[in-house]
Image (cartoon, rainbow, N blue to C red; front, side, top):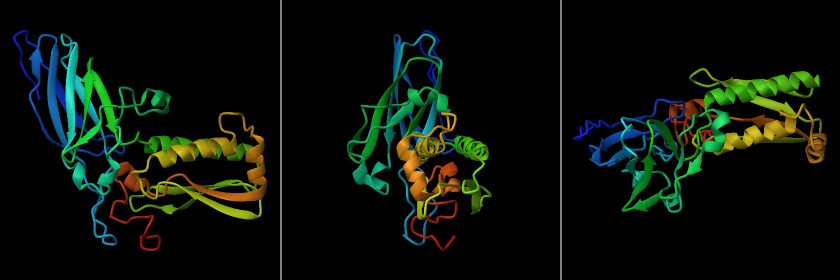
Length: 278
């Protein structure tokens, strides 16, 4: 959308979800209304559903992640945009919305910009629609997400760091392997650590929209392998590794993760319900 003001101000706002894990559909956006050095508009959006799952007879949806790109603010000090999720009452768990705060960042999706993510405190549910306001003050992009994305590139970096750490240990009980490939051809990696008699499996992101799970996996693997600490381990970690042999899967559903799905892979299989079907 764009508007020409008396001072030849042209504001452009673009919504995309083409990034890794993106999910949104643009419904409509109003023309920006310019008044002096301020402007405002409203953007209406829908969350895209997952592929229909025959097992649960539903097309799940709740996770969202999109990018807003704004230009033309050279002479505008405040551009106040109201974002509205029109189909918020149709999601899998509408009872989760009260108290929800949308996550946002004007940084990139790289780990070096993790600290720039914050929660939008204006988020609220009104008449079944999720809405929040954001003030854009400069040209550029802002990402909005149900929870910050954990990208596939970041996943591959985590796997590479784990492989490097395991290679340096020269312990045959430590290894990294593939459980198999997804339908779209991505590896499902498993990191095996520890020398104990007890067996433990720690599996993340059977539901791909639970991105916080892979952030947890990253922290767990960094601690348990001493990544970033020259391999040094704390006493509790050493005790756990003496007691257990641990199989860690950082992302069980990478296809669904890349597609921005909430619960299913690319053909509608819910991997936390249908272990033997796909």
